[in-house]
Image 1: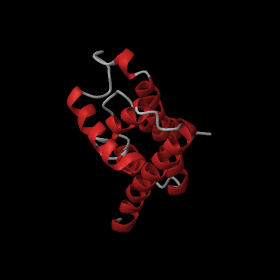
Image 2 (image 1 turned 60 degrees about the horizontal axis):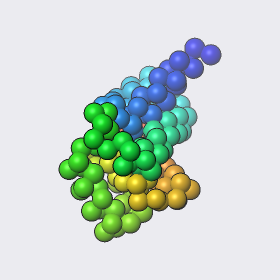
Image 3 (image 1 turned 60 degrees about the vertical axis):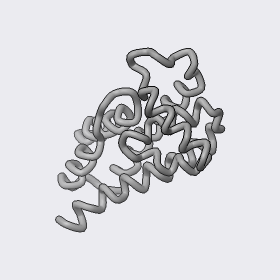
Image 4 (image 1 turned 135 degrees about the vertical axis):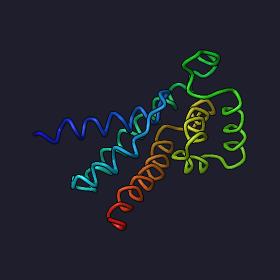
Length: 144
């Protein structure tokens, strides 16, 4: 039971990292790997949290016109424009870049704004974000 707060902290950092707040979950995950928490469970918790955070962005995107211009909006106009261009050019497969800093969060907002179905959104984003966390969890084990 003592590990529950640690997993909750990882979940929360991964969730917030995918939303409007400037957070990082990578250091939390790597730190927990180095502290000998089970990597598979860490990847699962971080992935679920990060994907759910992206779903928040998708939902904001669905209401983009109502929220655009608000101070807390998760992307600048330039980021939204760049992400829209990517999304229009590459379609839903651009969501494979949802893990990339700077462009990933705006892509998830644009996916909502351009009415990407939630099922395909979650499937593609989950693959991308899980792959990132697998690499992050494996790195300290490979070099440790």
